[in-house]
Image (cartoon, rainbow over all chains, first blue to last red; front, side, top):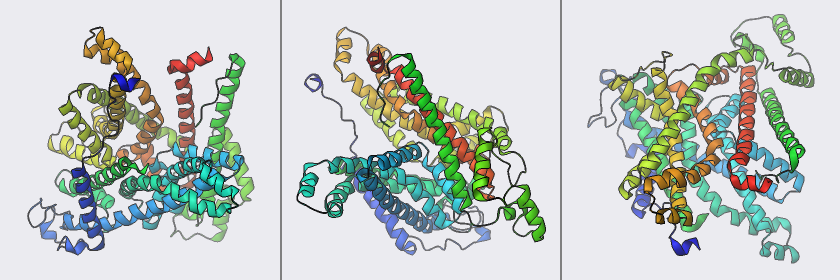
Length: 278
Length: 319
C-alpha cells in the first residue's frame, strides 16, 4: 500500500563503486606496508636524529619528525604491521570462538541455550573497550594480551549472530530432510549449518577488523599494549599527546591513517552487505 | 532480549518489576563471581603488588600481611566473605591506596558523571541540528560524509585534534583540566561527536521513513508547512526509533570516558581504572567490574520500563 503512494527512500546507502575501489586500494597498500614496509619508506622507524627533532612535515619527512627526531611517516608505515596482526588476528579468533559458541547455543537444549544467550545478552550491554580492559586486568598488559582482549571482547557479537542464524537454518526443510534421511547431526552441522553462517559472519568480520584495530590502538594509547619505542599507532598517539602544543603532526597523521583504515574497512563491509552477504 | 507478555493488573505488574529487579541482582552477582574467579586465576602474589616486587621482606611478614587481608583462608571462604561484604556495599580495600574501594571510586565518580552528562547533551543537540538542518540533497551529502568521518574516528584521536586546534592553536579553551566549566567543554565534545554521528544517522533515517508514510502525505495535503510537519509529526516517530540506541549510547559514553579522561589528563573513573589495571590493584579492578555491571543492569532496566511508557501501541495492549 505504502509503496503505491510514495517510493520509500533507500535506507542503506550503497557506497559508490569508486569509493569501494578506493577503499580496496587503500587496504591493499596497508597490506603491502604490513608485509614489506621498506617499500614505502626508506627511513628507519627507530633511527633518532636529535638535531632533526620536532621538525614539521617536509619533503624529506612527509609526516614530520617526533621528539627524538624519528621520522613519523616511517613509524606509521612500520606500525601498520602491529595493527594488521591485531586487527585480523583478533577478528579471526573472535569469529571462530563466536561461531562455535553460537552454533552450540543454537543446537543445545533449551536450558543451555537460555543460559548462554542470557550471558551473551549481558556481555553485549558492555562496550567492547570495557570488556577488553577487564580481560587485560586479568591477563596483564602486553602485545599478546592486547590481541586476546580485543578478540574476547568481540566474541559476544559474533556468537549472537551465529546463534540466530543457526536457529533459522536448523528449522529449514533441508536440515529436517537430512535428519530424516539419517544424516549424522555432526555432518549436518558441518555441511549445512556452518556454511550458511559464513556469509553474514564474514561481512561482520570485514567491518570488525576496523573496530578491532581502533580498540587495540585505544588500549595501547592507555599503556596496555606494546612498550616504547615500538612504532605502534596507539603508542605513537600517546607520545604525540605530550607535544601537541609544538608538534601537532606527531598525533594528527597516525590518527588520520587510523581513521582512513576504519572508513576503508567499513566501506568494504557495507558494500559486501549490500551485495547480499547478510 | 525478547519482551515478555504484558501482565494484567497491578499485582502482575509488581511481580514483573520484582522479576526485573531480581535480574539486576543476578547480573551484579554474576559479574562479581566471574570477576572474583578471573582475578584468582592471575599468577603472582598480591603481597608483591602491595609491597612492590623488589621489596625485601621476610616470609613471616608476608604471612602476617596475608593473614591481615584474609588471603590465607580457603578460596571458598574468601569468596563468601567477599559476597557478604558486597551485600552491605563494602567493595573491599585497595592494595595500593590502602583505602576502601568504595571511597576510591566514590571520590572520582563526580567528574566522570559531569563529563558524560554534558557529552550526552552535546550529542543530542548536535544530532538534532544535523538531522533537522540537512534537508536538501547537497546538505545531506555533506552531513553524511561528516557522520561517516566522526563515527569512524577513534575517540581519543578526536580529542587530540580538538586539543591541538582549540586549545593550543586558537587558545579558546584551557589545555589542562583546571576544574572549571571551560575545561569540560572540549572533553565533552570529544566524547559527544562519535555518538552524535550515530544518533544523527538513525534520526535522519527515521525522518525519511516517517515522511514516506501515508500520514505525512495527508498532513502535507492539508497545506501544512514542511517545518511544521517535521517538528509536529515526523520528528516524534524518528525520536522513538532513536530510543533503541539508549543502551548503546550509555555504553559508548562510559567506555569512551576512559579514553577521553586520559587524553585530557582529567580526574575520574577512567584514571582509576587504568591505574588499577596497570598497578594490579585487584580489589579496585573488581570494584569497577561490579559497579559497571550494576550501572548497565539498572540502565537496561530503565530502558525496558521506558519502552512500555513511551510506545503508545504497547500501552493499548495493556488497556
